[in-house]
Image (cartoon, rainbow, N blue to C red; front, side, top):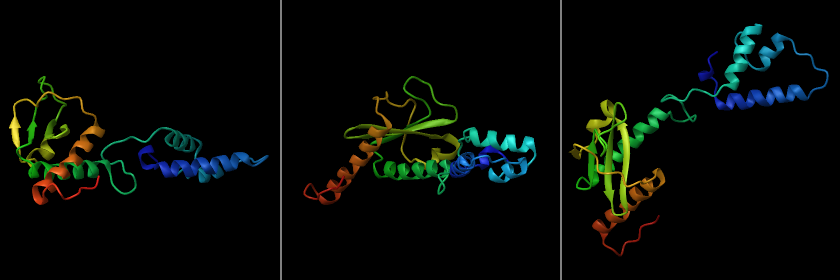
Amino acid sequence: MSYTKISNNDRRKTARRLRDAANCRNVQISPSALGRLIKAEDRSYRGILRTLADLIEPAKIDSGTSDGCHSFGELYHHRAVLFSVIVAMFPELAWKSRLHADGTMLEGMFIVGIETPEGQATYHFREGKHWDLFQCRVLDHAPEWDGHTPAQAIERINGLKRVLVTERFGDGFGVGE
C-alpha cells in the first residue's frame, strides 16, 4: 500500500478505529487483528509498520490529488479555461508573457494578466498546455507586478462584471456582489 492511495478520510477513520481499540481495557491485539484494524494489505509485521507509516506521513500532493470530486489538475485546467474566457471578453485589457518584468520566469510557465479598473489580476499557467488558450497581446516582459494578492486578484476579476453590465445595460442596472 502506498501512502498516496490513502485518503485523508481513510486516515481519519483509521485513527478513530485505533483510538477506540486503545480505549478498551486489557485488549491484546494480534498482528493479524491489527492488520485488519488498520486495513493493511500485507498483515506481516513489516507490512503493518509500512501501513502505519503511510497513514502518518502526509499524502503527496500533485496534480492528481483530489478533494473527492476534482483533482488539482482538473481545477487548474478549469481556472485556465475560465480565465481565458474573461481575457477573450476584454482583449484590450489583457496580455501574456513568457517573462516577468525582471526577466525571470518559473520553469515551463508563463503569466497572463488583465488590467482591471482596480488594478492587475494575474495567473501563471503551464506554457505547453495553456499558451494557445489565451488569445491576447504577447509582451516581451510582463508589466511590473503591483503587489496584488490572490484574494485581490479574484476581487478585481469579479469587479469586471460591473464593466460588462454597464456596457450592456447602462449604469442603472444593479450588479450583485
